[in-house]
Length: 100
Image (cartoon, rainbow, N blue to C red):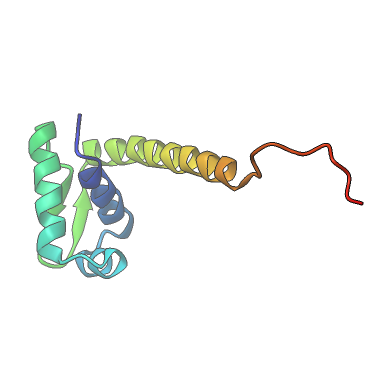
Protein backbone atom coordinates (compact mmCIF):
# COMPACT_ATOMS: atom_id res chain seq x y z
CA UNK A 1 0.00 0.00 0.00
CA UNK A 2 1.27 3.46 -0.88
CA UNK A 3 1.97 6.04 1.82
CA UNK A 4 -1.14 8.21 1.95
CA UNK A 5 0.90 11.27 2.97
CA UNK A 6 2.85 11.04 -0.27
CA UNK A 7 -0.41 10.94 -2.20
CA UNK A 8 -1.81 13.93 -0.31
CA UNK A 9 1.32 15.94 -1.05
CA UNK A 10 1.24 14.88 -4.70
CA UNK A 11 -2.36 16.06 -5.05
CA UNK A 12 -1.55 19.41 -3.43
CA UNK A 13 1.51 19.86 -5.63
CA UNK A 14 -0.50 18.88 -8.71
CA UNK A 15 -3.25 21.33 -7.77
CA UNK A 16 -0.98 24.38 -7.45
CA UNK A 17 1.72 23.38 -9.98
CA UNK A 18 4.07 25.92 -8.43
CA UNK A 19 6.57 24.86 -5.77
CA UNK A 20 6.32 28.03 -3.68
CA UNK A 21 2.49 27.90 -3.61
CA UNK A 22 2.47 24.26 -2.56
CA UNK A 23 4.98 25.06 0.14
CA UNK A 24 2.89 27.94 1.52
CA UNK A 25 -0.42 26.08 1.27
CA UNK A 26 0.83 23.02 3.12
CA UNK A 27 3.20 24.75 5.52
CA UNK A 28 5.89 22.24 4.53
CA UNK A 29 9.37 22.99 3.24
CA UNK A 30 9.86 22.60 -0.50
CA UNK A 31 12.56 20.00 0.14
CA UNK A 32 10.07 17.91 2.16
CA UNK A 33 7.50 18.14 -0.64
CA UNK A 34 10.13 17.03 -3.10
CA UNK A 35 11.07 14.05 -0.90
CA UNK A 36 7.44 12.91 -0.65
CA UNK A 37 6.99 13.25 -4.40
CA UNK A 38 10.21 11.38 -5.12
CA UNK A 39 9.22 8.54 -2.78
CA UNK A 40 5.84 8.21 -4.47
CA UNK A 41 7.38 8.23 -7.95
CA UNK A 42 9.91 5.63 -6.84
CA UNK A 43 7.16 3.40 -5.41
CA UNK A 44 5.14 3.71 -8.61
CA UNK A 45 8.09 3.49 -10.98
CA UNK A 46 6.94 6.48 -13.06
CA UNK A 47 7.56 10.20 -13.20
CA UNK A 48 4.42 12.04 -12.13
CA UNK A 49 5.73 15.59 -12.34
CA UNK A 50 8.54 17.16 -14.36
CA UNK A 51 10.26 19.67 -12.13
CA UNK A 52 12.24 22.79 -12.91
CA UNK A 53 13.36 25.45 -10.47
CA UNK A 54 10.31 27.57 -11.26
CA UNK A 55 7.54 25.34 -12.52
CA UNK A 56 6.04 21.92 -12.24
CA UNK A 57 4.54 20.11 -15.19
CA UNK A 58 2.35 17.11 -14.54
CA UNK A 59 3.13 14.23 -16.92
CA UNK A 60 0.36 12.43 -18.80
CA UNK A 61 0.40 9.49 -16.39
CA UNK A 62 0.69 11.99 -13.51
CA UNK A 63 -2.50 13.73 -14.65
CA UNK A 64 -4.40 10.44 -14.80
CA UNK A 65 -3.04 9.35 -11.40
CA UNK A 66 -3.91 12.80 -9.98
CA UNK A 67 -7.56 12.42 -11.02
CA UNK A 68 -7.82 9.02 -9.36
CA UNK A 69 -6.10 10.26 -6.21
CA UNK A 70 -8.57 13.16 -6.03
CA UNK A 71 -11.45 10.69 -6.02
CA UNK A 72 -9.81 8.64 -3.27
CA UNK A 73 -9.15 11.68 -1.08
CA UNK A 74 -12.68 13.00 -1.62
CA UNK A 75 -14.10 9.64 -0.59
CA UNK A 76 -11.90 9.62 2.51
CA UNK A 77 -13.18 13.09 3.42
CA UNK A 78 -16.73 11.87 2.88
CA UNK A 79 -16.16 8.85 5.11
CA UNK A 80 -14.64 11.06 7.83
CA UNK A 81 -17.61 13.45 7.61
CA UNK A 82 -19.98 10.54 8.05
CA UNK A 83 -18.16 9.50 11.23
CA UNK A 84 -18.13 13.10 12.49
CA UNK A 85 -21.88 13.34 11.91
CA UNK A 86 -22.54 10.13 13.82
CA UNK A 87 -20.37 11.25 16.73
CA UNK A 88 -22.30 14.51 17.09
CA UNK A 89 -25.68 12.76 17.37
CA UNK A 90 -27.00 12.41 20.91
CA UNK A 91 -26.60 8.92 22.28
CA UNK A 92 -27.48 7.00 25.41
CA UNK A 93 -30.66 5.86 27.07
CA UNK A 94 -33.70 8.06 27.17
CA UNK A 95 -35.88 8.14 30.22
CA UNK A 96 -39.63 7.62 30.15
CA UNK A 97 -39.98 9.58 33.38
CA UNK A 98 -41.83 12.82 32.85
CA UNK A 99 -40.71 15.90 34.77
CA UNK A 100 -42.90 16.82 37.75
